[in-house]
Amino acid sequence: MTVSASLRARDLIAQLLAFSRQSEMPLGTIDFVPMIKETLHFLRAVTPANVKMTTVLHEGDFTLVGHPSQIHQILMNLCTNAIHAVHKRDGGKVEITLEETVLPDWEAQSLTLSPGRHALLMVRDNGEGISARHLERIFDPFFTTKAVGEGTGLGLSVVHGHVSALKGRILVESRVGSGSTFRVYLPLGKADGARENAPHLEDESVTFGLRVLLVDDEPQLKRVLMEHLAALGCQTESASNVTEGVALLTANPDGFDLVITDQTMPDATGEQLLGALRHLELNLPVVLTSGYKLPFPAKELRARGFFAFLPKPVLALELAQILRRLSLPSHPSSR
Image (tube, rainbow, N blue to C red; front, side):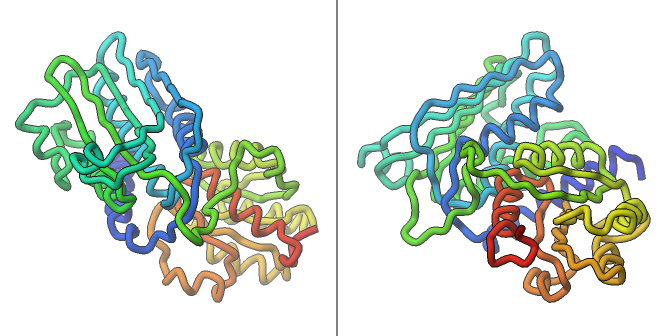
């Protein structure tokens, strides 16, 4: 199997898992703005140089109830679709806008939404646009106008599913030759008793002095995760496989506070790395990451010896939440 085919297969599996995980996602209170900034930071690194991406984030309180993975999937799919629509033309533009809108009763009723405060996310492109006959089907699973190998046809249906789960609404306007605009309405405000899903990264108090060993064989994902850790005040060493990771731990058994490991690597699994740590009598907390579904029920995570699980692509907000738990005085690894 070629590398490109493997990546397409991974993308398809990730999109399918997004459907199955919707009912399993614990909802909490999150801030929309850091999520957008984090996602766009990643996208800009992989956006073709001929595509101009602009962002307009209006000031306001964009607190909503959801799960970070839902927001990430919505943003990634809408933005990557827009980039794909313009990447082959000179002067390709993608604009992402976030603003607050207050829907009166009559407008909310016309949109089948609840009245009141909503975040309005708009993703515009100046691509070729979508024909009227295709507009009727763009949210259908597996429907795509892309060539074979360029997309799974699941992106917009995943977006539609997440927006609906968040009690929002997505609308699209498009004309052939004039580009497309996607509008996403999401209700704002905290739910009664909702827990914080993640800290605000822009709060200067959210820093952690942890020494982290990162074990992962995917260079790009490892680089992004190391950037997240550095931004959160962590010192990180990395290894590309389990053998390298065990060697680093053996050479410096007191040099780390946390291990973050991928589950599937060429020489061994994250579970085998955990076993090696216990054989070395190192009681370090281990966070497991994977772009696929856990190979065992999530409720068995702690029983198997892992501290937490981070789905890929890893979100800085979810990572910060785990580091905060590690830094609590009640945790044995706290210093």
